[in-house]
Length: 144
Image (cartoon, rainbow, N blue to C red; front, side, top):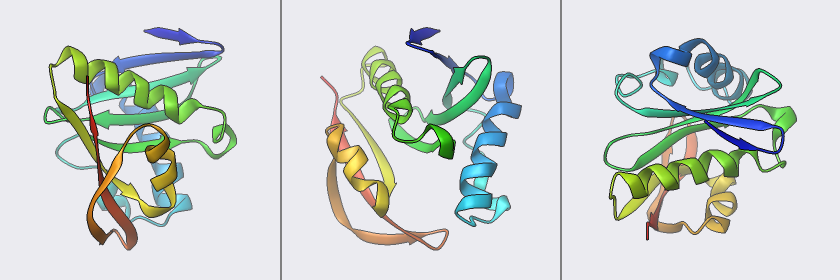
Protein backbone atom coordinates (compact mmCIF):
# COMPACT_ATOMS: atom_id res chain seq x y z
CA UNK A 1 0.00 0.00 0.00
CA UNK A 2 1.40 3.39 -1.01
CA UNK A 3 0.43 6.80 0.31
CA UNK A 4 0.31 9.95 -1.78
CA UNK A 5 -1.08 13.04 -0.07
CA UNK A 6 -4.64 12.08 0.84
CA UNK A 7 -4.67 8.93 -1.28
CA UNK A 8 -3.87 5.30 -0.47
CA UNK A 9 -3.04 3.04 -3.41
CA UNK A 10 -3.51 -0.69 -3.02
CA UNK A 11 -2.30 -3.30 -5.51
CA UNK A 12 -4.49 -6.33 -5.06
CA UNK A 13 -6.28 -9.24 -6.65
CA UNK A 14 -9.84 -8.81 -7.83
CA UNK A 15 -11.68 -10.77 -5.17
CA UNK A 16 -10.26 -8.81 -2.23
CA UNK A 17 -11.78 -5.52 -3.47
CA UNK A 18 -14.37 -6.67 -6.03
CA UNK A 19 -17.15 -4.53 -4.51
CA UNK A 20 -15.10 -1.31 -4.77
CA UNK A 21 -13.75 -2.14 -8.23
CA UNK A 22 -17.17 -2.97 -9.65
CA UNK A 23 -18.79 0.08 -8.07
CA UNK A 24 -16.32 2.51 -9.67
CA UNK A 25 -16.31 0.77 -13.04
CA UNK A 26 -20.09 0.61 -13.14
CA UNK A 27 -20.39 4.34 -12.40
CA UNK A 28 -17.79 5.32 -15.01
CA UNK A 29 -18.28 2.81 -17.80
CA UNK A 30 -21.88 1.61 -17.56
CA UNK A 31 -23.65 4.74 -16.25
CA UNK A 32 -21.54 7.56 -17.72
CA UNK A 33 -20.31 5.95 -20.93
CA UNK A 34 -23.20 3.56 -21.63
CA UNK A 35 -20.96 0.51 -21.98
CA UNK A 36 -23.19 -2.59 -21.74
CA UNK A 37 -22.92 -4.04 -18.23
CA UNK A 38 -22.14 -7.50 -19.61
CA UNK A 39 -18.98 -6.13 -21.30
CA UNK A 40 -17.67 -4.34 -18.22
CA UNK A 41 -16.65 -7.51 -16.33
CA UNK A 42 -14.73 -10.25 -18.10
CA UNK A 43 -12.64 -13.37 -17.51
CA UNK A 44 -9.44 -11.34 -17.05
CA UNK A 45 -10.56 -9.68 -13.82
CA UNK A 46 -9.78 -12.74 -11.69
CA UNK A 47 -6.19 -13.08 -12.98
CA UNK A 48 -5.23 -9.40 -13.30
CA UNK A 49 -3.47 -7.17 -10.80
CA UNK A 50 -5.79 -4.38 -9.71
CA UNK A 51 -5.02 -0.95 -8.34
CA UNK A 52 -7.58 0.70 -6.08
CA UNK A 53 -7.15 4.26 -4.87
CA UNK A 54 -8.81 5.27 -1.62
CA UNK A 55 -9.44 8.74 -0.24
CA UNK A 56 -10.54 8.88 3.39
CA UNK A 57 -11.59 5.23 3.24
CA UNK A 58 -13.65 5.51 0.04
CA UNK A 59 -12.56 3.98 -3.26
CA UNK A 60 -12.22 6.72 -5.91
CA UNK A 61 -10.28 5.06 -8.77
CA UNK A 62 -9.28 1.68 -10.13
CA UNK A 63 -7.53 -0.05 -12.98
CA UNK A 64 -6.04 -3.41 -13.86
CA UNK A 65 -2.95 -4.86 -15.49
CA UNK A 66 -2.67 -8.28 -17.08
CA UNK A 67 0.46 -10.45 -16.99
CA UNK A 68 1.43 -9.33 -20.53
CA UNK A 69 1.49 -5.65 -19.50
CA UNK A 70 -1.96 -4.82 -20.86
CA UNK A 71 -3.32 -2.00 -18.69
CA UNK A 72 -7.04 -1.41 -18.77
CA UNK A 73 -10.27 -0.54 -17.04
CA UNK A 74 -8.77 2.71 -15.72
CA UNK A 75 -11.69 4.45 -14.03
CA UNK A 76 -11.70 7.55 -11.84
CA UNK A 77 -14.86 8.88 -10.24
CA UNK A 78 -15.97 12.09 -11.95
CA UNK A 79 -15.42 14.22 -8.84
CA UNK A 80 -11.76 13.12 -8.66
CA UNK A 81 -10.77 13.64 -12.30
CA UNK A 82 -8.10 16.19 -13.06
CA UNK A 83 -6.55 15.79 -9.60
CA UNK A 84 -3.78 13.34 -10.53
CA UNK A 85 -5.58 10.24 -9.28
CA UNK A 86 -5.45 8.46 -12.64
CA UNK A 87 -1.72 9.20 -12.77
CA UNK A 88 -1.29 7.49 -9.40
CA UNK A 89 -2.93 4.35 -10.78
CA UNK A 90 -0.64 4.43 -13.82
CA UNK A 91 2.53 5.02 -11.76
CA UNK A 92 1.62 2.03 -9.59
CA UNK A 93 1.33 -0.11 -12.73
CA UNK A 94 4.65 1.17 -14.11
CA UNK A 95 6.30 0.05 -10.86
CA UNK A 96 4.59 -3.34 -11.05
CA UNK A 97 5.73 -3.74 -14.67
CA UNK A 98 9.34 -3.06 -13.61
CA UNK A 99 9.06 -5.67 -10.85
CA UNK A 100 7.61 -8.13 -13.39
CA UNK A 101 10.58 -7.35 -15.69
CA UNK A 102 8.30 -6.28 -18.55
CA UNK A 103 9.86 -4.28 -21.39
CA UNK A 104 6.67 -2.40 -22.16
CA UNK A 105 3.07 -1.87 -21.16
CA UNK A 106 0.21 -1.20 -23.52
CA UNK A 107 -3.41 -0.19 -23.44
CA UNK A 108 -6.46 0.42 -25.55
CA UNK A 109 -7.11 4.13 -24.95
CA UNK A 110 -10.42 5.79 -25.48
CA UNK A 111 -9.53 8.50 -27.98
CA UNK A 112 -10.66 11.30 -25.64
CA UNK A 113 -8.07 10.06 -23.09
CA UNK A 114 -5.20 9.86 -25.60
CA UNK A 115 -3.50 13.03 -24.32
CA UNK A 116 -3.66 11.77 -20.70
CA UNK A 117 -1.72 8.65 -21.67
CA UNK A 118 0.55 10.60 -24.03
CA UNK A 119 1.60 12.80 -21.12
CA UNK A 120 2.64 9.63 -19.29
CA UNK A 121 4.92 8.57 -22.15
CA UNK A 122 2.61 6.38 -24.21
CA UNK A 123 2.72 6.51 -28.02
CA UNK A 124 -0.03 5.56 -30.47
CA UNK A 125 0.30 2.39 -32.50
CA UNK A 126 -1.93 1.70 -35.52
CA UNK A 127 -5.32 3.08 -36.39
CA UNK A 128 -8.42 3.97 -34.39
CA UNK A 129 -10.98 1.24 -33.81
CA UNK A 130 -14.28 0.74 -31.98
CA UNK A 131 -14.73 -1.03 -28.65
CA UNK A 132 -18.14 -1.00 -26.97
CA UNK A 133 -19.21 1.72 -29.41
CA UNK A 134 -16.36 4.08 -28.38
CA UNK A 135 -13.35 5.11 -30.50
CA UNK A 136 -10.08 3.65 -29.16
CA UNK A 137 -6.43 3.52 -30.19
CA UNK A 138 -3.66 1.17 -29.05
CA UNK A 139 -0.86 2.89 -27.14
CA UNK A 140 2.43 1.51 -25.81
CA UNK A 141 5.06 2.68 -23.33
CA UNK A 142 8.57 1.35 -22.82
CA UNK A 143 9.44 0.37 -19.25
CA UNK A 144 13.00 1.13 -18.17
